[in-house]
Image: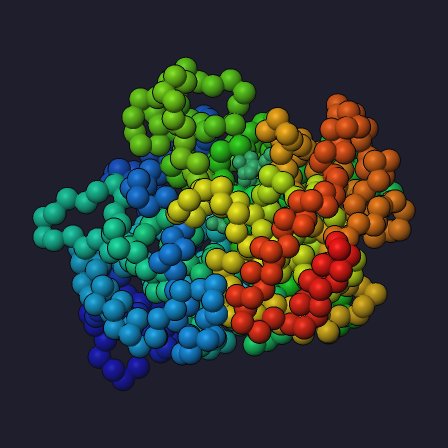
Length: 607
Ligand code: GDP
Ligand code: PGA
Ligand code: MN
Ligand code: MN
């Protein structure tokens, strides 16, 4: 080394200079009491969770119900991603595009440096080496998160591959790693008592795409603080993907096997809290079809040697929406959770030391402690669990995990679904007319906002490829990238694209389609369209099922009810057009020609 290091670095388990100098720089800025290099071991997890229990951050659950599992309760003002405070600080404002917040990188660094100054005083600074995707991938994507939150360390251990093996490989291969700096922004003065969920009213989730670094301040919530997930595997990775000709997407991946034993892989992009985890863990209600899970939130895809689109899940855990996850709707998730080793955030506690949330069981417990720690009974008139409460569970606890999850080169994608939460207009399923028409469907995807992000809920917004909060660069460039990268495809092996909507409402206000396991009927139709065996009706927006082409065996729905879910409504689509025009106008000419041509085609067909 030849340099004098801070005494705090004496125990560093590495001699890798780029890492040591960054850790030192951060320690000098943030002034922690201690540095802990995370090895990712069981023993370390036990120590950290014990400490978090002692600090009141975690509540140990009854081990007979949920072994080795914990519940955390956040500050009520720190429950979701904060999109208003999320920034892409590219050198040029133009490169962040109109969908992102931007600030000059130097100005932002100056601002953040002020906030991080002494921000870890009185705390331990944890250094977490991690890799998104496989350690033995051809080009492993490394990161190191520095955080002052042990809750973040324990959650990162579930969500990503972390620890000593990763550090060794970074060092051996002298690899680039994304420096990902996180602080809850709550330094402790000498003798000051800590709170169970330290955080700061001021929050900043900031990305520097050119230098591929992340600075996150003030929040302990998953999407803001587990920096391997949204910040790296979507925002920074989308920039890497642009530069290296691949795709980083907000998609689940599942394997579907037909009764004849033929396997297909489906990737699906839905906005946050719009059904990815549920579809990825689906229990088909139709006989003979089998679903296995590969991923539930993030998919990295690249075109393989034969021009086929290959997909991997870069994560190692599930960070799933708890409410609505139940034995009736998602038994596979429930079985995975029941194995334990999970961290729940902002759920309710049962009197026997278990957890509960709306939709977990049909029967509502007579008494609970709600997510704010207050007594709760069914008459309370408020949800017991926060609508964005989450379970964090290792992915290998899913019984239906596909063995291909472990393959570093992933699986071939045969179909891509784009979907959102729309009460009207968007039919249950529409097959795109072509690949270009499918990209148009993705580019114009829309959805009602949910509790996954701070702000109003239920407002329709455009969410291109379900990536609105996650594109790390200009949205028009992103759509151009989709067009350009698919130029590498073998046209015969391009996935078929479908637009789906599980959330259409009837005139009475209920869901028009039962959803969950019955979505297998839509998957079956999509596969049969690929195989050329299912009928469809051509409409101006694409191909929709004929009533006879959807397998409705065992489903208690009248023909009229099915029609209400699947129908194309010309009036609703005429009403949709001005919104599409406004949306495209916002790109200021950076949209690919092939996509604007699709809008012209749609208008002509609707006329
Ligand atoms: P993700 O955030 O995209 O992974 O979405 P989830 O799968 O966690 O689902 C979010 C919410 O939507 C949960 O409350 C689910 O119960 C609900 N949900 C998921 N799939 C369906 C469906 O097919 N129909 C209906 N009505 N609700 C669904
Ligand atoms: P989700 O993941 O997509 O499962 O909701 C978290 C998020 O997107 O904020
Ligand atoms: Mn997500
Ligand atoms: Mn999910």
